[in-house]
Structures are given as structure tokens and as C-alpha cells.
Image (tube, rainbow, N blue to C red; front, side, top):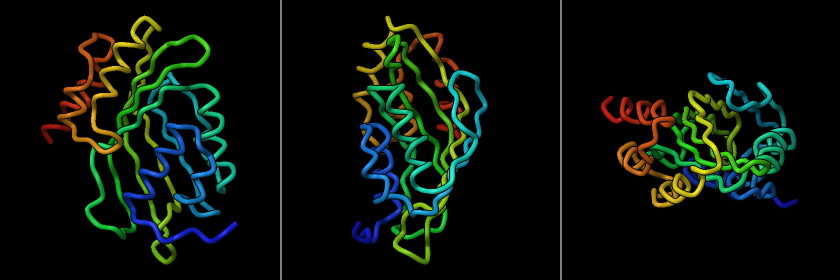
Length: 186
């Protein structure tokens, strides 16, 4: 295994998103240090994850391999972008859409990422806190229209306004729409 190249905060985040969304676990070592840490804060019962994982292999198992076995058609959007290449910490809200492999149900969720970077090393992620605020589960009949609308949003970096505009007007997605609207006006 060769030593990873130096990476910017935005590159580390987008590499993680590609690894998770496209089920490419081999990319995780480009974005995360070996002794990385994952913390999960779930404010919903609509999805489950372990509360924490330690080390690159465990974090990759939780965020990419196990996740990829259960979900497909994943699109994750960061609602802001780091404004510098090297930063110790970055927080951003996120939006995700995906379908369940077993039954086709579609999930749309949102929350907050807190990224801590290895400031003394090559800039990869040292610690990631994922807060899942809402996760709406809709029947498979909604999969095509939701995923089609989400595919029109700039990926993986977008704005609250673009995310809100791209979100279909379906009553079951009201918590997500309200989250985006509230943040849009803050």
C-alpha cells in the first residue's frame, strides 16, 4: 500500500461520498487516516447504524460495505463546501436519497456532518460525526420520481435552494423540506 497523496478538505469529503454512494470501499483509504473514528447520532428510528466505529477497516465496513449491501441508487449532497484547502474542522448539512435493495422503498434523509481533519498529516479525515436528523421512508412506487428529481441536483456539492427546489412535493417529505427551508433562511 503506497502512502496517500496530500488531499484538501473538499477532496476528502467528495472521495468519501463517492466511496459510499458508489460502493467503492477501496477509495476510503484516500479520504481517511488508518486510525480514524466514526460517531453516529441518530435522531430517527427509520435507519440504523452502530453508534461508533474505530479504525479504517471498521469505518469502511459500516459506511460503505454494509451500507452498500442494503442500499442502492445513493446520492449524497453536501449543502456547503469548505472555503479553504486545509482546515482542522468543517461542519455541513447534507441531504441523501437512496433505495432499499430488498423492497425498493425509497429513503430521503438529512442531517449534519462534522469533519475533523488530520491537520498535521496529509489532510485526510481523522474523525467524522454523522448526525441523522430525519429519514423519511416511502413505498417503492415513489422511487422513480424521487430519484429522478434528486438526480437533477448538482452533485455532490449543492446549495439549500437547489436541494429544496429538487425535492419533490410529497407530503411524506415535509420534514426534509422544512429542514432545508429553515436552513435556507438562517
